[in-house]
Image 1: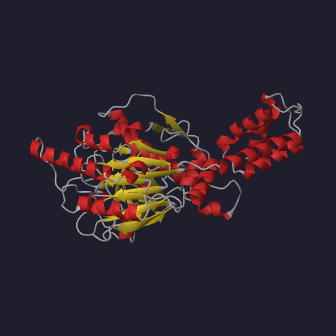
Image 2 (image 1 turned 45 degrees about the horizontal axis):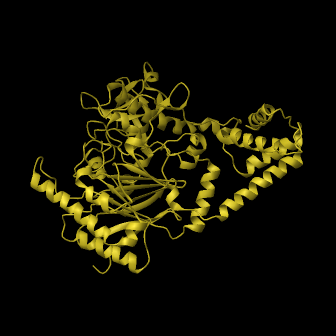
Image 3 (image 1 turned 45 degrees about the vertical axis):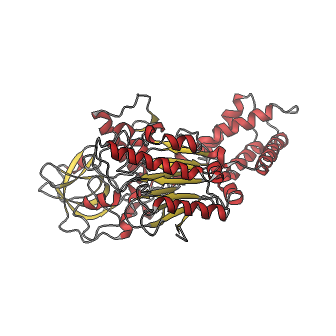
Length: 530
């Protein structure tokens, strides 16, 4: 790694007709280490230094350590000056709809992500359906192969003997009696038998000798690591099954930090670190509110929201963002029933009037509306389009900082990525648990981020728009994941990702959650005095 960096330093300065001596080389290495510059950003950072160096009046062809140090110190002074200036959160807040995200697909040949230039359609194609599943497998697989239990060290050690080697289903053929470890998708074949599928084929699984499966939830369509013995009957006799290891966001960002997954500009790890520090120091009291099941046709919802707004203004506690997730109706609206559709629109009009009656909140707070399964949108397949514009026209006219988001959607706030997803997912996953784990614990339900995907189910269970499947990925792992669900409220921080369900804002409890970006944590709140 040191040799590679040294060659990069020499190459960059040679481009500007400079030669590098040992002292200058040592200083540049020290600067790169001090700021933890990622490998992908080394060359651009060096070019910035080289350009500034050559603008100095006393710059020499052989790089002077004194001049180089002076250039570096001037950059530090500029950074300190910039940091003293107050930051405006408004300039660093973006709401990203699923259909706006660029599509990055995994290239097996290059071993990295490539941006797709093909036009995306809601209908998709057979090729895109296959590609979306293959991308899921390859993304998880490259994380597994980087895991310390699978990646061999370059130094000889006894640990190499304990390394586990992943195999493919095609390597099982003709080798009964041998033990294998496979990574693949759990699915049922035409005969109704549970199999594991990878890019090369599938094999039937036999769980008769499995004592205790690993943590997590195993559903039709999820990816799993299975270890077992291949039998004469062409089945894999399972002795262990578990979830693939989850890769922390920092590791993924250090490798793919140059890739703009959200389409709002990529940042370096150094910039992320500086943003995180400034949020903690300067925006320590900034909050986001998350509400789910805001049934506008329920008699207690609008009065409850009014009380919540009253509490905010009376206590000078104005949130920067309020995310309201559907369903915005307590019951499904019959297709073509004009009277019910009109009532549905009237409820949004009442919500618009309510928000507009609080000028301070209207002026300072961003409102994000995310549709639920029962709401009226153009499509019912994930990802869902925003609420129909004709139904929310008064909201758009009266609340200027309002965003009609897709489901799911993402919030980019400085270095943080927040994923918001409104779906009754837990019930659907529980209905499709495969016969691997008879007793499902609460902890198992919260660990599906291991799947790097919001809907780890087969397409016949949860239809998705294959051309936009990338918008359902959880890779790199987000900073926070809001799983708005009818399931019981919870919060857990797993592999650095804070996951929580705000609960339902219905009935007598009127519960919601607040998220504090400075602490990367959430709290359960109630509308008091109601």
